[in-house]
Structures are given as structure tokens and as C-alpha cells.
Length: 310
Ligand code: MEV
Image (cartoon, rainbow, N blue to C red; front, side, top):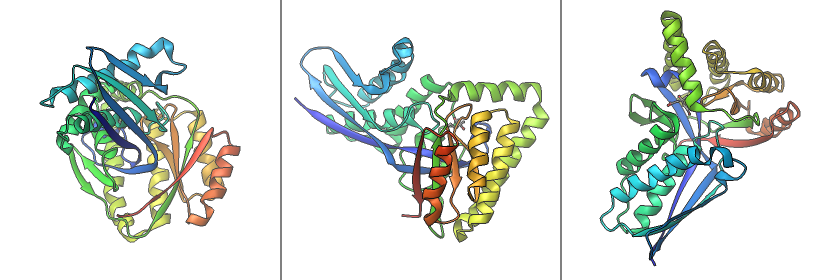
């Protein structure tokens, strides 16, 4: 029987989440330490078997979680010329679910790559992205497409209205990610911002405009590796996301703890209302201390990631 393997990694949004949905630019980085592998093998019967710990403990919303995966499988099979009759699909993921880390986009990218591998017609990056967008539309409703690009990129990217450009980084930057332990639904957070914008259009558009301007200002800071200036922009972005009402008490507490522990800056990352906080370490040597302080402040898990231009 034919078999195939596909991999993808998590992502973190450094700046511009939510505003990106309205056409503002955003910056995202790959999280190579958190990845997943999808293994597929052909079945002789016409059955689809799916095995994944993504469903463990979530029996009640299994159908909801299943829908984007089946959509990705269907979309990928439709792009191949020698689709198998039946399929075993096994997803082995280290990416926490619903933490703003792009797990749903990464699963879909892994599925697309694995099915391309099995059929020996590897899907090109645009085809993989099409599969991811089909699944993301089911998982998140209207999405900017940023997650799909970020989980497929090996370097930091600037994303605006579908266009992707690499972000040069002048010196390695060390970030600490902290999991609040609370699930955050990106679909709900995006919906809440949409409603807020309908109620207060000019105020919300002002916040979105400033979030986008922060991204453009940050590009020079990345190029020169200016840690204090980047940290200040992250702090400002967190304040603006709070105005969009996508932060919560736990995220604010972790952001405060990171700053007290000496972070150059800290903010929520991804959809918010649960999920993760991202803190910029003043230097690599102090990242471990930041992790300890964030766990003391209640983070259930922490990770370090170094961002550099490949
Ligand atoms: C979610 O990771 C990022 C958001 O900006 C939504 C999107 O871009 O579609 C909140």
C-alpha cells in the first residue's frame, strides 16, 4: 500500500493579529520546536480512518474538530490524479490546540503534504495553501490567510492582504511563549472584534490603523536587531489588543509578570481570549529566568524560540 508523510510547524504572531483581518500588515514567525507529523496510508476498502490525540478529552465537540480535517483531506485528494480508495490518517501533533499557535492550519498543511507524498504528486506551496484555506474557513470562518502562510514558512514573514515577504532580522531575537492554559477560539475572538467594529467603527478603525503602523515601524527594528524598541512596540500592541477586547485577566497577568521579570516587551499572540502570551527576552541568557517567572505567574507551559534570518 502506498504511504505518505507530511510535516508542518506552529507559528506565533509577533505583531498585527486581528488588524490583519481588515487588510493591515502583520508579522509572524515559525515555531520549529512545536511541530506535527501526518502519516497517511492507502486502504483497499472505501473507508477513512482518522487517528489523532486532537480529539482526546473533546468527545463533545469532536464533530466540530473533525469537520476542518475532513475538509482538508477532501480538498487535498481532489488535487491529486491518483487518489486512493480509502485512507488511514494518523496525526501526531506537539502543537497545543486552540492556543493561537496555528494548530488548525498546521494540521491541514500536514495533511496536504502527506497526501501529495502518498500519490507521488507533491502539492506545490500554492496548492497546499488552497487546502489550508479550505480547512481554515471551516475552522475559523473568515480568516486573513496569515496562519496558513506562517505555518508553511521557515522564516519570519510580513503578510498583508495575501502577500508574503520575508522579514530580515539583524540579530537573533529570543522570545518566550507562555500558555495561559485556557483555550481561545479564534473564530469567536474574530467575531467579537467584528461586532465591536460595527458598534464603534471609527474607534476600532483607529486601533486597527495604529496596529498596522506598528508593524511597519517594527521592520527597521528587526533589521537592526533593536530589542528595546521592538519590546516597546509589543507593549503598545498589547494595549491596543486590549482595546479590541481580545485580552483577558489571565493574559494581562502573564504580560505583567513578563515585564516585571525584565522582558523587553510582552503581548498576547494570536486570536486571544485565552491562548498564549509572547515575551521578548532582553537577551538569550535571560530567557530561562523569564520562563520560570511566567510559570510562577500561572503559565501552564512555556517555550523558548529564537528568531533569525535563515
Ligand atoms: C489568528 O492566529 C490571527 C487572527 O488575526 C485571525 C486571522 O488572521 O485570520 C486573529
